[in-house]
Length: 318
Ligand code: SF4
Figure 1: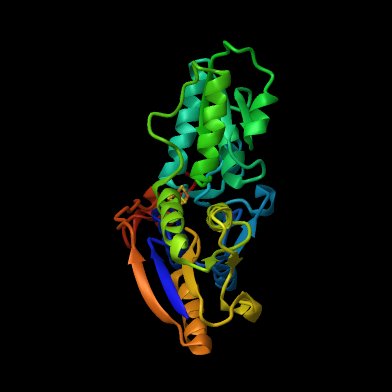
Figure 2: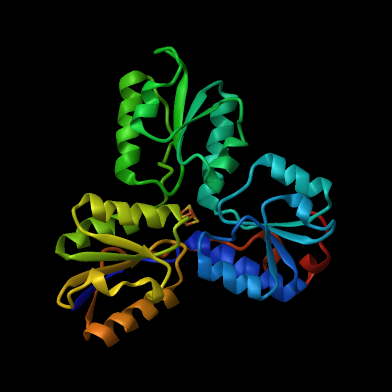
């Protein structure tokens, strides 16, 4: 067996920042630290933090007044920020700056009187947060066919935004359909699908040409990981989205394949390495790293967590 190990893969700058923030918050304040929704969409990361005393909640009423609460990388709506303030929670904001960018675009377009077509997945945390920025102005579309069903006049003042973790190809198709219906369509100054999503998709697009099977490390609820699997399947290569080596099925392999291994932006490198060890032990697989790009993106920690000790310990509500 031959393994092509894709690079870049795995953690993006937003996920790194969110995980480091939660780690620091635990060290500084001690458990329990509360997190609104999953810190990132990955089973291993969530379970490791749960073991260290993190409590993940879907409703802020579950968080005791005055407790420390972290907003995950996916961002939250203004209503949730308000509720946190009302409940006197000590909020730490680990929203990815590239998600915040989309929030700010939603606010700008809505102030300028646009109807905003948000391209994304209905129940995704990020889409729920973005929609909350301009609830009355935003219409969600998930597919190109949804565009045909929009009840808007051809000369409507419309702009589009996208979720950061979409399929680049799907988003392009939907935007083309929007432009056909609304030639005056406005859009973000710089596209919303983030660098990490684009780079990981590009790697699968290019490297899957040489592969018989694709393994994507990531959890089922990770949007960007799902898109990597779909991209390989669209290109005619069988692909599997797995949390770790325990999910690998022997019937997927004869033992002489070329296997492309990659990981979504929320999957830790430890599960990639575990998967490689499994394939090396079982099939004497040889690993070749193929790097398409280098990534040197870093995001700062939330204000309250900068520095190793000091003022943020007793910072109160923020
Ligand atoms: S996938 Fe992109 S938008 Fe999401 S956290 Fe990572 S860098 Fe930010």
